[in-house]
Image 1 (cartoon, helix red, strand yellow):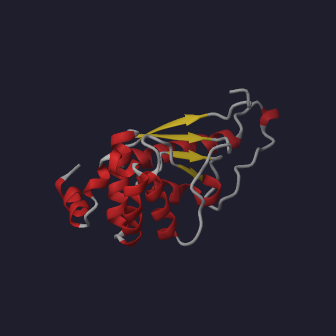
Image 2: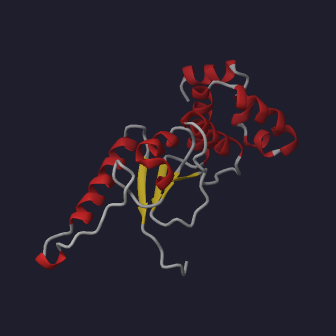
Image 3: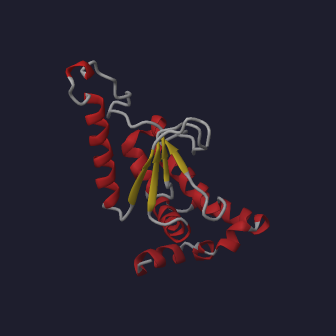
Length: 178
């Protein structure tokens, strides 16, 4: 953690939350929860980012199945990002914090990674939030347009998250037997 981030977290009185035992004790966590509702969003995001780096690492898992628990997108963008950070800060040590791509879109999901999310769930979509449609070019013996668009979206997501020091790991949907 750099000195600027540490200083910002310390000045808001949140430095003890870097210790997992402080967060795990439900009796002592309640006053901390109230404090996180009032603190500046960027400081809260920095705290959540430090916790995810220490406990989970820099890998972001992108899953195309929808069977995972996610932080619901409710309210404004700042409210959503605060919910993501609080889920990371007060969740179980090392737990995954998931974001539904269908609710947020790729851009907001990328931002949520900086607030403690480490799992993006759902199929990659267009910027308009629409599923990438299958095309009818298979009979031509050419790679499908859908496949090319999905590859492009994966590269774009990987590149953007690499700029934050993250590594993206794509996991295909399971057949339900695992």
